[in-house]
Image (tube, rainbow, N blue to C red; front, side, top):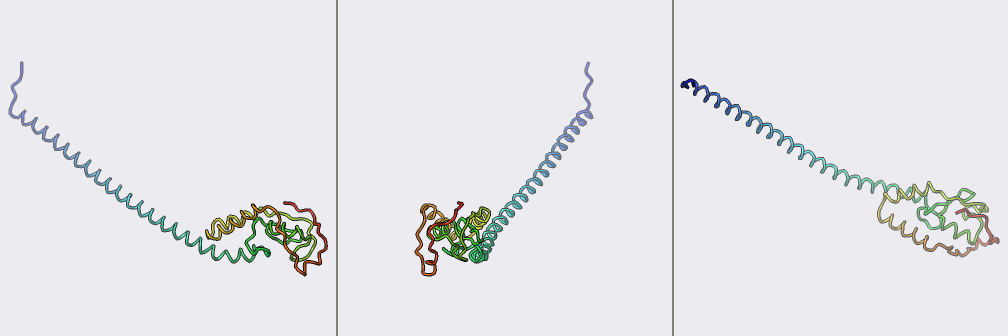
Length: 188
């Protein structure tokens, strides 16, 4: 047996359906608002990241310019204190003599092929030592500096390595006082 439906019952169902759909619409509107807010946040974050990337690129450019300016400042100091008196270049594989004078390894080997005395103080050379740490410092300084200077340094270095032998240096009148052609041990 079925109970007859009243008009109130249908209205009740219609109200419930209407309330349900209003609730669903309200929930969807809230979801749209939340997504819109999230989209705004994401757009804002993307814009912020683009600005950060732009700032980083500007800083990279400034750093390169600053690095080059620092190199320009450092170059005369390197040349003055780390320059070989033979070739007037910044030391290429610096070597220290027993008297504590320093020259490029290639320059002093070439000198020692004809003389056994220090070209600066004229003391007998009893040993020569390579300065690996100073060489590393010079190489790092050259690498981070002016590209033209770095290329020139590397060109000269390769040229000397390729030469490998000793270049004969003609004795000048004040060097002729050294009548000895032999020289002490050279540690290379």
